[in-house]
Image (tube, rainbow over all chains, first blue to last red):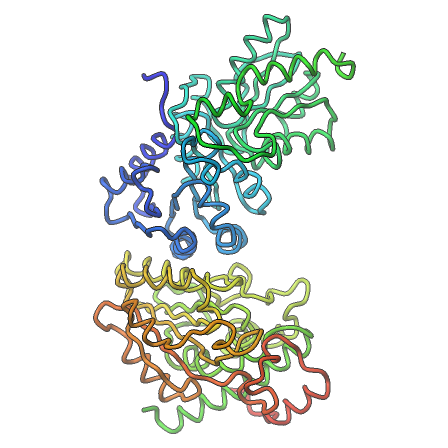
Length: 315
Length: 279
């Protein structure tokens, strides 16, 4: 097994698998099929693949029409186009009538890299999370992306599946028990809880090891589903640990961090710090450089955790 | 050519539907009268003559589909669906009221007989493309109709759909443009010119016909000619009069989205006639 792999490849592999057994699965793309990897599905199932060209808005509404007729469309493009570009179509044609469309955005987050801020979707989760009826999935590695795709196909209702561009570390802890709406406890600990989503799972695990050297046992709670949020797991963590650090490759506004903070402050207030993109646009660079530059690393989680644990509020 | 009794039947249906439209918008104190009145003959012709459908079985697989892309003209569609028996005509009183299944813009999960939800402009023609593509994938022979507003054609997404329908040879997609030449802020040609409109659709690879959208014979002929033609989608550009049927509303842009007051409602009702027999 490689040590790194693309999440979009996990998606593409699952699609081919689904295409074999499910004649109702159709895939649409908007002239980025080579990048999203839906070209793999096209190769295996050409009669059920539709390239809409560079028209993301039409793409989502055509998908809505197909869903009305009982097909399960995977409407695929870059995350920035699937959400901010086609926001009205996602809201009014898919979320509002609760149609069984799977909207898939690859190249999510700042690690999209060289294309720069215009193509780095760091607000997509916030936007989609705010829409009623939507389920939001953000898997953390190749295998979890594969499982999330299979689960999305079985689930009846609109789903936003957010994937990345780069090759990200394979995290064996993610590979069991994917269930929509369920968080995964990747590591046990009772001093603090690190909540991760997407590719930050691996950073959260590295951070937990580092925190152990400082004498703290961190629980790592991974959320491949951001909506609906696994509030049971959160409540348990709030009772059993003293503090929270959230980590996501997304703006600190509107993503996992705010979802967790919102739930906790209403139900079991706990000290919390957010690791994420701090309300700024990104810039061009290699994905890994940008994760460093925008504070999305294990070290950033550790710094926030230590500052929180050593502050008066948590002592 | 329609026979005389069919033509008369449709004309009476149109008169009834116009009365319902004006009443709904008056009672709701909001809604879009002008474009509902201009598209009345098209919607009446579809549901009472041209479309295969069954109000007793709204989900019938072989039914023809209809998408009201200009979703703000929901009053005309609701009035026709009620008249067909998809739901009681008394429901029309609840239009735009809390708890009603008759939302300001069509919401398919709630209203019996709707084939798609529409609302913000430009979405419906794409959705109709999806319906037509699904029919093609299943080798179904049913047709998919869509009705666009002329102002709506200013939305870029309409032209995305135009490209798409041509690429995928959606020959069973038959769209109308309600060419009443008025939009919220005034004449389409002053707000954002659309002419020469038939040329634009032809250039996108569609079959195009231009008709009088208030003439049932012309609507019938245009649709009959459209079906099964040479792998191309069809656009029927229907020249109409916004506010048609109520003299003081005709060709007045202000009646795009304003409700009548009590006095105006009573004048409109008088002009549209009353107590016509319900068939």
